[in-house]
Length: 226
Image (spheres, rainbow, N blue to C red):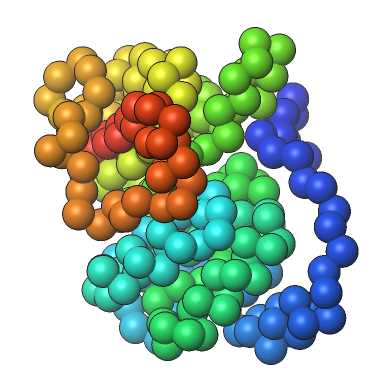
C-alpha cells in the first residue's frame, strides 16, 4: 500500500447484468490485468508505436475518437467505472480498433507499479473529479505526488494534457505545474491555454457539452516535459 495515499474516487458497486458480464468475458483480450510489476508495452500491442496513457475515460466516447484520429499511437486507458469500461469495450469492437487496451484499477497504483520509467509519449487526464468542497479537496487526483509519478512515466519531451471545467481546480493545477522544474507550459505564458491551442484530437464529450450549456469555462492545460 502507498503510505498516506487518499483515493481520488469513490467506487460504488453496481450489479452488472448478464449481458454486461458477457461483454467483460468475451472482450477480456482488450483488458490488461493490473500488475505490481513492470510490464513490457511492446508485448501488449501488435504494432510498436508511441504510447499514450489516458486516466479516467468516463463512457469512453473521447477515447475511441482519439484512437481513431491517431491510429499511429497506442492507448492505455485506465478507469474503475465498470459500466464505462463495458461501453468502451463495445466501442472498441464496433470500430475494429487494435490500438486500445483497458486497465480496470486505481490509476495511482498503475502509475506507481505497472510501467518502466519513461514509457509514455503523452498522458491525458480529461475532466478529473474536481471534488469542489473544501473538505474533499484532498481527494483530487492531481497533486504534488501524482505529478511526480506522471513525470517518471513520461518520456523526455512527452506531454501532459489535463482538461477541467472547474476554475479553482485549474488554478491549483496550473500553480503546481508552473512551479515544477520538469515541465514547460505549452502556452508559453503563466496562464491558461488559449482556445486556439486546443489540439485537434480533443473531441467534445457529452460531459463537456453539459458544462458548456451551464456556461462553465473549459480549461486545457498542456505541459511538455523538459
